[in-house]
Amino acid sequence: MKQRIKIHILGWLMIGAAHSIAGDSVDYANHPGTDTFIQAMVTEYGFDQKYLEELFGGAIYKDRIIELMTSPAEAKPWRDYRPILVTEQRVKQGDVFMRKHIAALERAEDMYGVPAELIVAIIGVETRYGRVTGGFRVLDALSTLAFNYPKRSKFFTKELREFLILTRDEKMDPTELKGSYAGAMGYGQFMPSSFRAYAIDFDGDGHKDIWGNPVDAIGSVANYFHRHGWKPDEPVTSRAKPSGNGYEGMIVKTRKDLKPKHTLTQILAAGITAEQPFTGDQPATLMKFEAVDGDEFWVGLHNFYVITRYNHSALYAMAVYQLSREIGKQDYAAR
Image 1: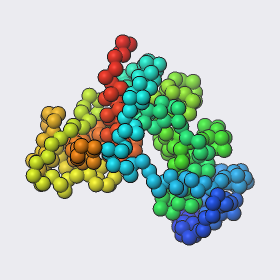
Image 2 (image 1 turned 30 degrees about the vertical axis):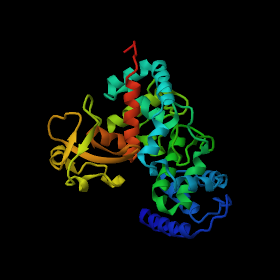
Image 3 (image 1 turned 45 degrees about the vertical axis):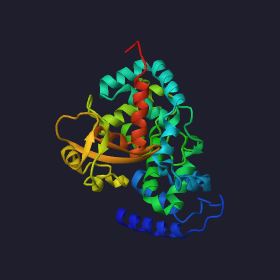
Image 4 (image 1 turned 90 degrees about the vertical axis):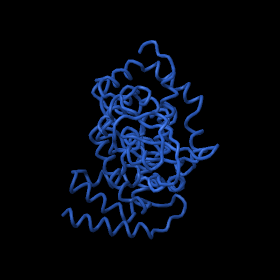
């Protein structure tokens, strides 16, 4: 049965790729992919067919979602990307958030070993500390991307499945939840699969609420980093200076290069000098960013790679790291 479903899914993906879209006119009640998806959810996950048919009858295609997917902020050079996320206002707002939730942040740091300022920086970069969590219905976003964005249809079909299971398990209305154009949700912008894997009830009220409960969001972000291998009290990255050209083949160029393929010893031997002295050999990456005053070189260690697991972008990870450093400079008397 599973093999037959997979064959059907491949068929409707091919149909979806050729499907002509005009404005927001797609009807998911009659879309070539919806029926197969519903059958898979009924057969493999025990959903009621009539319920899903009615649900997708109300799902709406959004052309704006496709537009946003094709022009992500991470496509900008560092000189333009950094000023969007590492700002005086975001640091000040992070300070306010830190002071307000210092008890939860300290508890998360104690339990998971993840610095409080890093947790705050993630929430600050993702949603301005809960101020901007997204205005698209998650159902519409994931349906649009699963059924009408062939380039990443496989990924978003999985996320749509995870979303439906999530809402069933948490007894939530899938038509009410809102998030980003990619279907990310809450303070920390968790995708549905991340919610199911890493979200926690950090305040003990019996609910995992990352939408309206900053304490649960704090614990969930900390748990995410912990589960992805964050190493407490270890360095993250360092500015570096190059010499010669033997290092050029080591520079991170795509998201596939984010996982360290070289050791720190190899990078240093290729003509790179790290400003921060590191002890011991370990996996490392070399990054080059287009800055205002010329190229910047950075060496990233294991914990930098862990940050990229949240968003597979060296630019994103560097912005989070630098924002966390600025937030960490503040004086928190309670700590």
